[in-house]
Length: 598
Image (cartoon, rainbow, N blue to C red; front, side, top):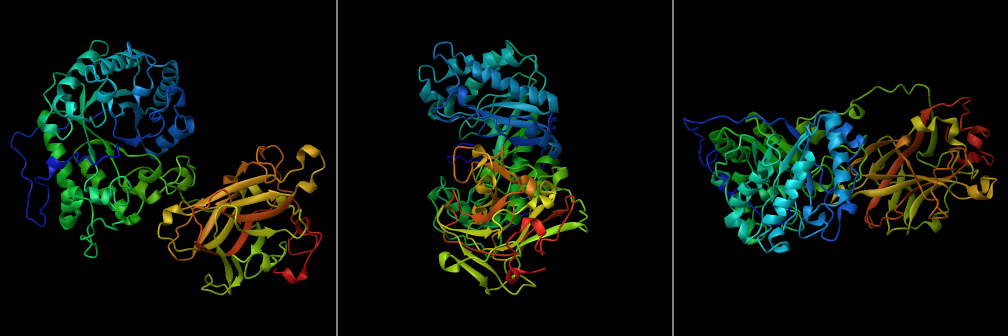
């Protein structure tokens, strides 16, 4: 999706399927045809993989999503299509024959093989803008013919592939000539491949109804759905829209007089209408009526709402409304996008997510997708679990009391609104990266946590924080070995396993929440004392020096106040369990009765 203000549906503010506040009603035409189903139904855009920027090449294609783990996960969700944006202008090796780089073909084949393996259709989406400026001689016609003839030759024997000629055609020339350019590209592909579907779209600032009646039985008509724009893009830096806090559906408390760029002013002022299910269905109806008139296939290649400033319920409401309207008409779709601010995951700050924990399950339900097995509730028998207390109204029996004069950013104990059933809590004023942290130092400096089956255990704590942008929550938790407990010189480093707590784990809404993090989600990082040596070879649960809650490497939460309580490690007992509340428990050699909690 280009970060420019294009209203793809301006023509569609016409009749709708239900009465609305202006008493507009949808009256179907008498000669209405039908929408022909596509071979696929629903999926996502794998944005950021074959998009390499203006300076990248095919060798810079990122394969982070192009793997078995991702496609298996998508299959579990019930997705049967992925739209993959590609920047072909960056992949050519010659401006004369427009030959595509070998690295592109190699990575494309990995993608297509995965599609075949999992029965997921791959849409090759030509997603770069500015082609007419890049190839001004003939307004990029030769270039486009060159790349699509190569792609057609390479893919004609494939099963699960579709060609999308151009995402959101741009520029003055294409505004007047895109439809004829599109016709030539269809003809070029059909010289080679007369089987696979081709996705076609309207010229810039034109409607679907203005697309010519191309003589081809294997076309899919596409459009994008971001209406109402002031809702779906509120908070987007590139739109000029601030944090409008608009709801969907419209709420009487929504402020419609906030200053916004002129292009958005009318939509905001009339959001009482535009922010309704009636209007959203009108837009989808407009698309559906035109495609049905053509007796053709239809695909909404992009739709989504930015997860920056809107409340999650409104975001889910909008997605559910759009999805149901499309499915009622038999229109297939792909969400923009898989990850980040428009994506399926609560962790919006990274393209790298954990498929087993970061998923926004409520959004998945709104989209009518399947809940993956990892998110289905399974009863855990904890009757025989052991427990190590780090803090519960005071430090646990394995943990040293902190010299508070050295930690001015901490208040322990803190009596400001402690968690339910608690006397006090820990207050941590988060600082810039590397500036402060909340440590739990084991009294022995070498605690043995292996008395628990750590890979099946959990780190649990209660957490409270109020943030203006809860989606930006981010802090680390480090388990750190004691280098002095290792015998061999090459082992004598403070090895670390870490986890980053994000909005996927807890909501920073000012309320107390229970957080439970499976220890298996902690990953190896470099040693604390040597940044270029990974911990994966020597880290052990039997030589623990400390556990740190930290802002290490990330100062984005500086100034926020975190409250924590009831911090424990709990899990299945491993072999001979010794109660850590005893002097012999967990390797404690310097037991402090003043810290005794058990």
